[in-house]
Length: 434
Image (cartoon, rainbow, N blue to C red; front, side):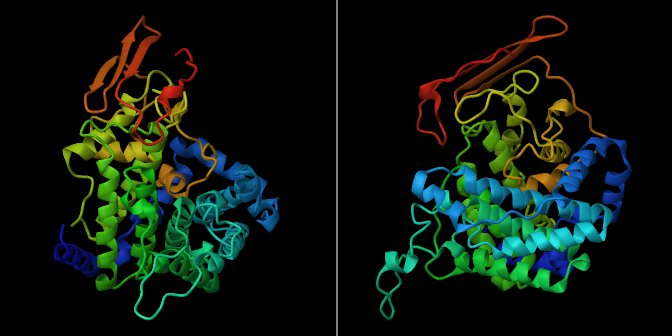
């Protein structure tokens, strides 16, 4: 799609309602009434309510320098990241509870969490700062560029856009769009200003280029979706928004080029959930922002990628564990239901194998909210049946056949090479019986 066509699509969307069209499924009072009342959501609501009851009685954890510096000094990520992600759990929990019930205690807890996240030194993880997390960036960059010179420079930590900075921008702009009428105007203003300064301005500046814009794996989709969501929620002017979206669509094409035509995710099913899940979130928001004029979910290759989840499961929650995949994996219910609505061939696993509210230790907003609002309570899952899949481009074979009425015999094999993202096949791993 060229610039003219993209601009015209955005203009069409603006005439139909602009960014008020975005994520209507998350803003719909009728949907939230269904979530509160339908038996299908009972267990999911219990998980969120339990988390809120616990978190209301806990203070927001600090992110002191003593934790921030640990990665640079020892290489250990867990100390800082545990506290960092705990804040994202609070953000998800109190945003959802505020939308569900609108009680003052949840809204105030959400406002405090947003304020604390706006206070963070950087939204980027120390592990993603390339060894500069405790460095003074001015000392690294040296002299200022001379007049007329454009020079590549190390970014200030506040302005680095990694996976989690992008996810934070996505989360803040989207939940504020859902809850703006219930939140303090100052909190809303500050959050949007921080997203603009930390995400959009670094992305749009003259000498801007991020490594993830041209990779063929999950970073492209996740970072691109985060920047794209923030841009679509915050920028109303189509002439300003169009070049940003055009650039991001190039990044999304890089992401898709990492898949073969057979749709397999060589990074493993966990990264399919992560990268493709964020790609779908971006695609749906862009479709809504353009009032249906741009639909990135079209095409046979996209369909095959959507069908990969069922080809990666053996039995129960046991999965093909090549590359960077665990032996078991929970599936994202909202993403699966959305894909089922688009592609009838998509199979839905047994509900007991869905990801729960706190299964994701990074507490990603895009997944958490869509596991509620993308659900269709009329859809039911079930046990895996017999199947034989051979994905020739990825050289992957998966077979399930019935040993008796109660159990399956499963076999998977992969050939090829190790030059794939997150490929760890050459070191082997212990097998677990199905």
